[in-house]
Length: 483
Ligand SMILES: Cc1cc2nc3c(=O)[nH]c(=O)nc-3n(C[C@H](O)[C@H](O)[C@H](O)COP(=O)(O)OP(=O)(O)OC[C@H]3O[C@@H](n4cnc5c(N)ncnc54)[C@H](O)[C@@H]3O)c2cc1C
Image (cartoon, rainbow, N blue to C red; front, top):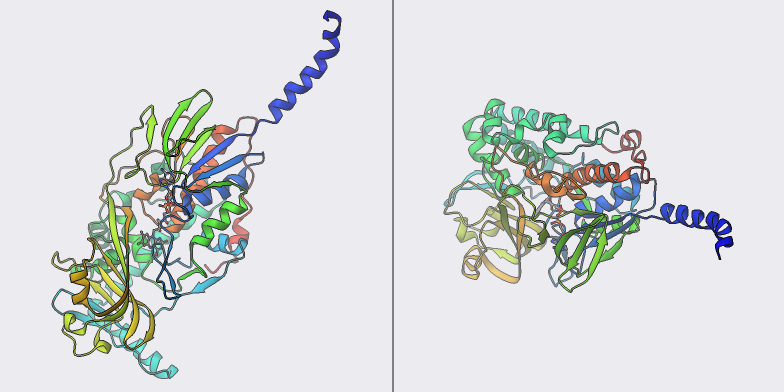
């Protein structure tokens, strides 16, 4: 027996080397929304080594706050994150590599827009009824002039503000960017941190916008995009204003297809109907537990959901700043709006896009037509801070054939100065993408934060086993997209 040992030693050494080389880190991602799915993609894309990636999703489908509503009449419409900005380069790139199609959205919100103060439209643009190109262009120009007459140079200052914020945000696509340990460092690097420390109103006043513009048009935009007021923090406000431009697009078939495609492309194991209810620190990593009693060991965990309303039991407990989520009720109605409610003589006098001022008695933030079947048969989307009761809906609409309700825990309630949770929650390998949401919450910011967290994880977990690889979406490749 003893004499055999010298012969066995080389074999043993080979076995040890193989087992070390065969070490495959187990990375668990909680959440299959755009943050979790893009984290899976970026992990796979940046890692030079093998990784096992598991995505835990509590629902029976992927996408989270990017979801469609099925009206039950054949129409499926975006119910959450719906519009994508032309300069959202990650979303554009994902759509391209996944072979999905971009659906260009109409830029007609300014034509047929009304600003409602609870008893009257204080500003209303003209509806385009003619199909002639010349007449459409003419009315559209008149409408732009109407905005200009009301807000004058303020509109120009507003565009400058949006362009300046966007230019700073575009730095996050630079391949030579550092890896950031904190949201603060990430925002400071792009010169965006300051605008999270003050209100949008203050920032816009500094840019020369009048109180009238801020209290009217800016307020309307904040209420539509974030269900909040002009007191929202500056960067979130600027991002919300980006949502009032043009050239927006969405993924044909639903933006959720981006999340589904990324998880597949990353070759990650998707665990649907798996609600994570515990995360326990154990030797060399964590044990993740689900409501159904399953347990899994993970070397690292990425939390890709907002933790504010989640009930995950962390052992040991984690400490993050308190954050309130803003609930947005999205109500979809197939039917026809009631002109009497708006003091209008007929349905055709009611604007297709109704924005509202910050007046507590107004029970909704916005109403807009999503689809028109006939003059007396349309699909409307209503955003409100509180649920729309049947009684209220029956006053706002004269016909209601189909009604669908969504109560979204939609985005943080923004309050400057914003305080951020760290990207690394325990100084080890518990990562939190949605710490970034205090700056702004969009499909693209989720992907931008996910890219940083994926790189951070690989660089910290890495050592000899993992190395950062140049991302394939080099800036050059990005340049082909419509900037
Ligand atoms: C009404 C509305 C309109 C919007 N409009 C736009 C828009 O037009 N354009 C835009 O860019 N953005 C928009 N947004 C914002 C955008 O949708 C979000 O910022 C983005 O989708 C957030 O993605 P996420 O992956 O970070 O989080 P989520 O999409 O919330 O994903 C988190 C996922 O984690 C899952 N999860 C949570 N807890 C657990 C658990 N314990 N175990 C397992 N799974 C769990 C959830 O089910 C969910 O699928 C809108 C949001 C709302 C609500």
